[in-house]
Length: 395
Ligand SMILES: *Cc1c(COP(=O)(O)O)cnc(C)c1O
Image 1 (cartoon, rainbow, N blue to C red):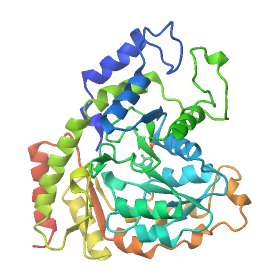
Image 2: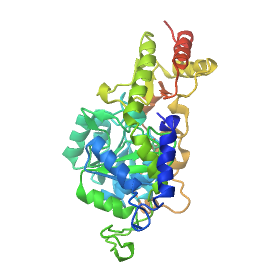
Image 3: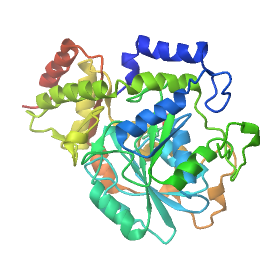
Image 4: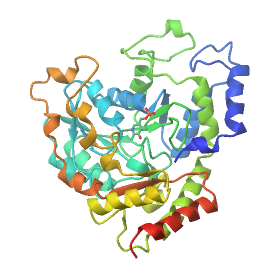
């Protein structure tokens, strides 16, 4: 998955252009920047490649989630449905928006299931934060149908799925609003960075205003701009955007390498009857950043994790026991521990998160392993993994 693996002269050249000709701030300073606009350039590259009307860059994927929630009108007291298998940011952003996360079940796509979503809808439900975990999508037609039927905003956390598609349409652009992360370990890296994607004019306007203290960005005099709303500072710097410009131009190459490397491992694993694979409703749209597979049960999954470690196969993730991607292990979230009193504490009938149960998700995650697919692998690196499989899996 990580774009940093193929950093080269092109990223350096882009940064140097900012330092030598341009300016570090993404807005205004027209007299100083010699027409160097890296954030704008990356935004238009994203729109062109993904066929989406608007992309707005921010300082991180987490900032993109907060911005997307605010821009889509989701705030105090609104319920937002989330999966228990995700990165904590998808939940934190909801809590810090003053909204209420509601956990729903996933299925073997490793993403929210349509029936899981439907089962937890209440009169307060406003949105679904659909997370395209590990580079691929879920049952998007059915998920969209549930959202439409109940008038919910479909927000896509596509932070791990840049470049993925569903039936030809980019992940992150299927719902009303989507988000990308360009942090240090993502498919495309800006060092730190993120993006909000939308085809909705009003969501876009709220997104760029919210992430820059409510500035309307009309005209070329920042001091004379009006502020229709309050906001914050989630701006990306021109240096970070510059890295992203170089990286974005490598997206096709990244996807091609990932898909080739993943296929080699998947073909090798497919011969072991005890292994089955994550369901991917549109295989051709998988960003292929991870290979996720199932063992028959939890006990065997744990055995295989240890056996692969003994064979020195790196970057094998058993999410069920890891404390940053699965709800079961997030005691700080179960106890809603913030730095200070949280808005959700004012909601008298809020869920008791220590009592949240997702047995279907537990049954799936307890036997799920994922391998990170890397860009820098040599033929020998791939063969070493395939040889290790032969020692670990049952024929
Ligand atoms: C990485 C990630 C984020 C947060 O992105 P940052 O840029 O690190 O803030 C959010 N959601 C998911 C699913 C992620 O993987």
